[in-house]
Picture 1: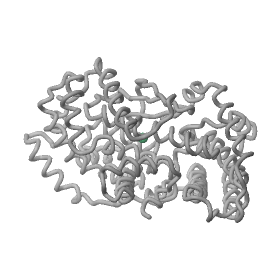
Picture 2: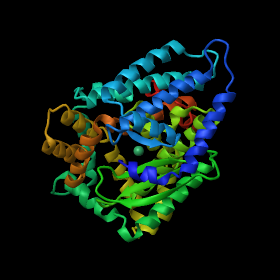
Picture 3: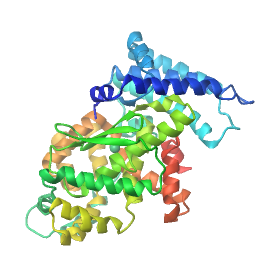
Picture 4: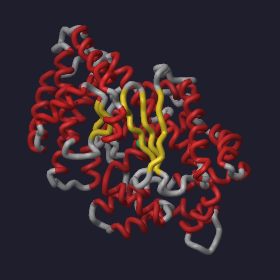
Length: 446
Ligand SMILES: [Zn+2]
C-alpha cells in the first residue's frame, strides 16, 4: 500500500501541469452565488486541505494514497515542513473558516455534499494527528473518528451456525481450518497462469463496466506483481485516468481472487472510482480536494465499500458462476465441474467476514496478543495460519481500516438498493452516481 516512490515516478510533470492549469481556469470562470461567498473561496479552503493532507504524508508514509494535483503544492508543503502540532492547529482553523463559509443551500446536491465532506475529512485528519502524537483510541472510537462508521460487534456464538454448516460441507478428522485449507488447495491458480487469468478477468470486468458506465477513452491501468506486503492487492491511482494495480504473490492465489481483485482494484472498483472523481469533480467542477486521497479518512469506507460491492454489481447472481466455469477455470487449468462446489463453500465462508473485525478489535484494544489473534482468525475466519499472520501485520499497519471492507460493502449495498428502488436494472446507475459524488459514510444511511 505504500507506493509513494512508484506514484511520483509514474506521473510526468507535464500531466501535473495540465491538471493545475485546468483547476486554475475553472477558478476564474466559476460564477458567484447570491447567498454565499463565491466558489473561489471554497477552492481556496480546499487547496489548504490538500496541502494539509500532503503535510501529513511527511509524518505518515501511508497517509497519502494518491495525489495528482499541482506539483507546486507539494513543493510548497516540502518547503514549509509543518510539525504535527502545526498541522492540527491549521486544520482546526480551516474548519472554523469552512463553518463560517457555510453551505450553499441553493447549490445542487453535490455542492452541498462537497462542504459536508470536506468538513468531515478535516475532522478525520485531526484525529489522525492525535493518533500520531500518541493519543490512544479504542477500536470503535478510532473507526468512528477516521471512517465515520462503527462496525457491529459479534460474539463467538454469532459465527457458530456458519461453522457447523461448513463442517458439514467439509467432513473429516482434521481441524475445520485445515480441512478448508486442504479443500482450497485444488483451486489455486498456478503461478505460470496467473497473468493470463488476471488479464482475462480484468477484460471481462472492464467489458461489463463499460456497458453501463461512461469512462474517458484514455483510461487505462497496468498490473504489477509484488511480494512482501501486508495486503493482497493495491490500486495506486496516478492521475490522468491511469492506475497501477499491484498483486501480492506472497501466498497462493485462489481462483476467486481473480474476479475479486479485477473488480475491486479495477472495474468497477478503485480504478473506476478514481477516474470518475478526477473526471467529474476535479476536471469538470474544478474541485482540487479530490486530487488527493487521504487513506485514513471517511473516503476509504466509500472506496473499499464500493470496490467490494462492485463485484456483485458486475456479476449479479449466477452470472459469475457461469463465467468462472466457462472461462476462468479452464484458463487456470482447474476442473470446471467443481466450480459450483467451490463457490458454495466460499459463500458460506463469506458469512464469517465480520470475524476479522472481531480479531482486529480485540487485538488493537489490547485484549488479546498476536498469537491469540492468529488463533481467532484461524478458528472463526477460516484463515490458514500464515494468512492469519499476514492479516495481523495488516492490523498493525492499518488498524481499524479493516471495517471499510465489510461494513463498507454492507452500507453501500443498502444505499444502492434503496436508491435503485430494489430494481436490478437501476443498480448500475445508482452505483455509478455514488462513485462520482462526495458522499460520507454516515450519509449512506439517509
Ligand atoms: Zn481496496
